[in-house]
Length: 505
Image 1 (cartoon, helix red, strand yellow):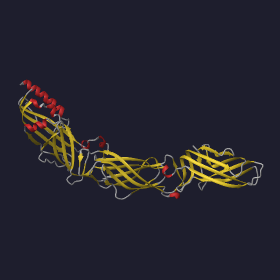
Image 2 (cartoon, rainbow, N blue to C red; image 1 turned 60 degrees about the horizontal axis):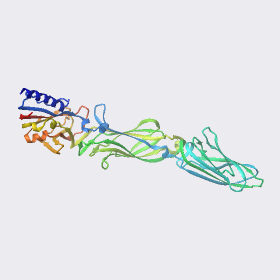
Image 3 (cartoon, one colour; image 1 turned 60 degrees about the vertical axis):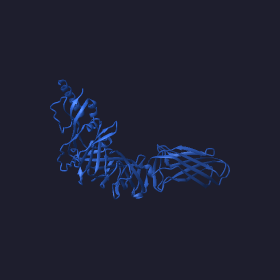
Image 4 (cartoon, rainbow, N blue to C red; image 1 turned 120 degrees about the horizontal axis):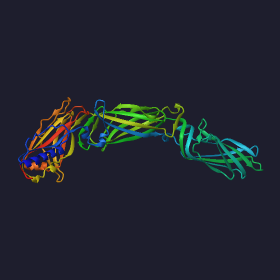
């Protein structure tokens, strides 16, 4: 018999250390004697569930923060980069300018054509004062078409200068009608009307009397990209649709409705374009179904001044109460921006190739909420099947489960327990007789009276052969708006006490 006592005592110590957690125990079977005919006490679950276990997902916890009072809040942030970019409001499309003319000649052999071949890079949106070209090609064709004689023509422009400030100069002849120029780092400076002029100095080599000449000029810009522009800009409306995705799987939850109150939207902007007015028309929370809920009822107007180097606060808006009945994955924003709202009256503006508008959107959902009939379910490993080889136990007189809860959350809990044999798929349901634990609405812990449930030999076998415990809580705030903070949790103790009459070793 002493041999049995030593063996069983050692086995009990191993079982208790391998199956219990380090949390405070809510129960203890206080076994005084262990022998071949006696009782065995085994903790199955002994721990604490906080907000991190309720969410039970690393991605979800990424969005959980606490405020200065320790109240949890869900925070979703997203950056919408380059919502409006320089290319949205100005670019030089591939352009061709064709000019022909007739010029009367009073004397030979040299004459000058001044202020001819105008072409305009301004548009109805922009009156261009200066553009620094990043890359692009200008192809210039010039020919005198009225006679067949030798000539040279030097075309110059004070409006187009290279990186050293040297004006454009290109020479043509009766045998060289076309030239190509790489415009990288050239500067274009139209006159006050936005027009660029080419002037031509022409020398004619002929002994014949020439009364007039006819010329043609083709000027083509292709693949132009800009370093910067200076000019006047009309007010331009640009519609924007943007989505901010996140991953908040609530796979352990099934719920009719969870309502978040006091949600807040914060908008910050980084703007290196010019003054911008924006109107957010729709701001909607989306899930894996059609839209969950609009977050605003009226459009939000924001003014976005220049802030090229960092994000600055642009607006803070209280959102509608949010009613969620599905998993969430994105927030979507539909808006219009008015770039340079004062238009040409704003005077000259400067925009470089990196100029853009970016928004940082931050939505906070404090856990000031109400919950209607939500269900939380988690599956926990159960090592009873490893501990017992049922063939070694000849007779179990009684298996008693002991279940106790201390609730620090401000919501009601209705628990249920199921034992799962994952090999066979068999689930054994434990009847807790509608145990109901009220929420700690006044911050006083609510302790349930321990529930004792007895099982006969056949049902005990189902429990002992299971390898999973399915723990389910029905959650309800009972009509109250509550806050969830970092001091709240629910403490759970589940254990088994086995009375047996014989064991074979």
